[in-house]
Image (cartoon, rainbow, N blue to C red):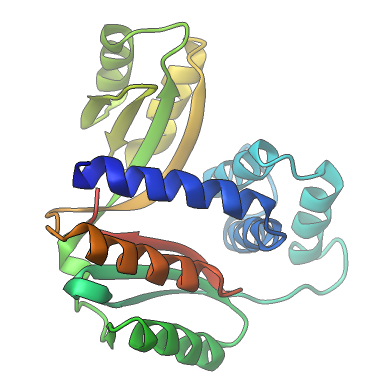
Length: 239
């Protein structure tokens, strides 16, 4: 089994597990809270909030939960929690670079928890910039193959400012500069294409070559980090 298919299989299995975990809603609500605090409570003018709300809706989060969170942090529903957005960097098993996105109300707790998990997994926490240079911050869109084709997605996305379009088995992946994410997403949806994911992500510029045993260790480290309440997302350079 190739490294790509092995890692993809592991990630799909984890996504199923995460969907059942109550912490998934907590993560989504934190993202909504930070987005609303940063840019206001209107999804029309605050694109980051729109992305967060769309993700929550896709996870079948009740509308009331979303609205209560937005109202709370924008002063309409009492005082809410104040979350700080952090990005930790380091190396996991087999010296695979890790970028760990955190939303927390206690920086010291998050720092300690992330460091403990990485160390236990055989990795190490680094300073800012340790591995960040190996990743690019990009817009990432997934379009369902049903009802469209590569040429149509390519034409619309490229015209709207996309950088790259990849043809996958079940979907098309569209890569953009962060500032073009909104325009590309809206162009695709205007053509009635089914956009299943639209988010800001960190894409690796290189790929680590690891054995299947090492890949299992990396997957276990990712899972342990994602089980931490404060961790929103873990990025590696495994495809």
